Amino acid sequence: MSLELQQISTIVDGHTHIYPLDMVLKPNSLTVLLGATQAGKTSLMRVMAGLDKPSKGSLLFDG
Image (cartoon, rainbow, N blue to C red; front, side):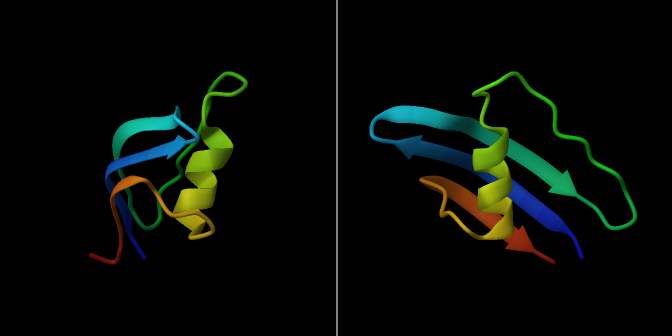
């Protein structure tokens, strides 16, 4: 299964949690998500898991 994020961004109450982001996660690969506290790691993981909807952009599973 592949996961592609195209210009994903999240804005909550006027505060940007995720700035526009492009990323492709491919099968049989390891991806590590690092960042400072309050950098948007959890917000990004929630969008990728389908728990939250991004404010802008597209999330594609297997194309």
